[in-house]
Image (cartoon, rainbow, N blue to C red):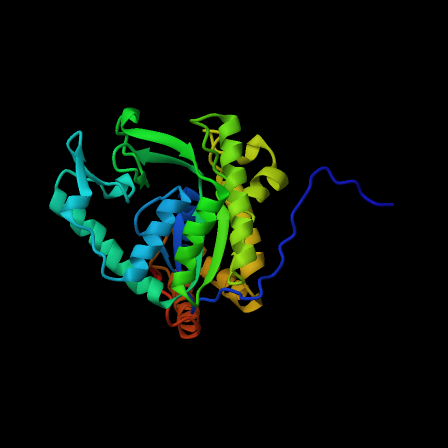
Length: 324
């Protein structure tokens, strides 16, 4: 007798090109990119996340990729503007904004330089598309990555077409050459324009991703959006704002990501790293006892073994903790 299930579930299909700790990665896109990036960094992968800050639309993402590929297109003072006492860049998230133009520009170009070095060696590029709705600057016609709360009268808002996304993002990806690209649509809902508008935007992104994957064998699609809407499918998996996924939902999607892109050896390393990090959270009542000193020695031996297997991984914090 079969057991009736009360949910639909997606099953991960192991990737033909698995991710290993030796692989450099660059992640760009919406805030969901940061969720995955934080997980990758916590598990000691060579991942750089959002060198321009959070970027939501695919045209701005494509422009960022093209600029990184060019290698020497540093940002200038002419590309900054002042609004309400702060200096901003139309190509960057407000985390780069500040009261001193020189400081803002230095911060932007330092991140750019680091990302140029990363994209040169990257084996994987992870892109999260957040919205197909864009702000177009009046007068210049420029699609901006962030409007920095400049009054709406300065922009026109429109929905990108599938062909616009496919042509522009596809061209930027082709220029990069030999890199595996993972495309995903953010499960974070963009509801300011409305529920129907959000669905049209997400549908446009899904169709554009499908077309890019069809045209380019080096590009594949990761179903983060579908996992949230069709697998989890419940408000208990949203944060308090009912827009962003909860920590539980992020963990579930991360597990799916792991089962898709990590082989058995990599998963085994993740378990070892998890144990080391859990041990580092332990706060002993009596730190000077022989038992605790033996505990620390055991962790140092585990770290030594891990570091030998993963020489590129950064365990500085863990080494410092157990040597203290």
